[in-house]
Image 1 (cartoon, rainbow, N blue to C red):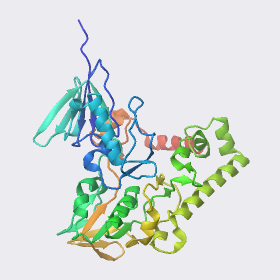
Image 2 (image 1 turned 45 degrees about the vertical axis):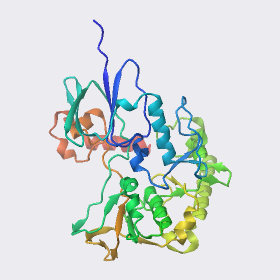
Image 3 (image 1 turned 180 degrees about the horizontal axis):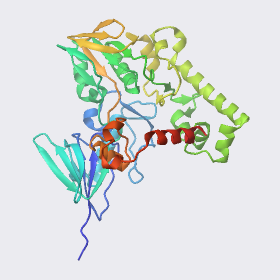
Image 4 (image 1 turned 90 degrees about the vertical axis):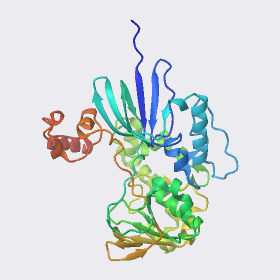
Length: 401
């Protein structure tokens, strides 16, 4: 009897950046909550100055080169629209479009007798799919995480940075004069730049107890080497701290000898100095409040937009180190008593659980990140015998040795 082909479902609730061609011997389908191809780069998430932190030639499949960009200037980086068009073309050329179920949100994935059962929410109804194999390719930017605050008769639009593409036209309205941007992620920088380009007044609220404003590095080092190209070299792995590779001779030289540590420290000091000078934190204006407390503490972004820091310096921007406490009508009440009136609010408040399709017990069984509410897992069969204090202590010893 001929073996039945496996059916593979690939979840793509908005976060993946690339498609993958299915094996000819398998039947494969993709479930995507977006309306178009691309995940992060789908058409509905694009906005005017969305530029990837990737140089031309670094983002394409080997069998399909990305054509040169025309009509736009991105300093050698790739515009978001270019990536979407490339992925759309790739999907068409490789006969993938008919395999994708667009506008279908997978709300739950659970074990069943045949493998996995998926609960898919479409515009009209809830559908159920069963599959023998499941690949979750959601990425980390699929589930917007909105800020919690007290709301009373809110009369102004509030969106997440995830929705900027679909909301960019409304932001261009002359009725929108003052926009509040919340938090200091890389997306917040790009959104502030866009708003200033539209002639808006920006009030930028960044909490004091977070990771501080996102650190940004200039696009080229000494006007010659591309920062992204340098970061992709083997040398960077030696001067960067890591607990995953401690036995390499060169890593021991750079991380465990006096000479190597001196060279490593000087390298990061120079990189830090170049970034600080490029940003102009010392000019004494509002930009000084954007200086990270500790450079590179939570990842480093790249300056992708032309004249970026000049526009931030010269634009109508007020930076407030505070936290949103409540919103009443068109007024934002901050933790330290300040009141701010606005016509629009954009939340750059990070992302939520991108494995939320699984319940806590399934996450634990699969080895996926899950909530730290350990008491809630105490009575489940899969959590029996887990000794959290012991595991935490062993992990601390392993990391600190």
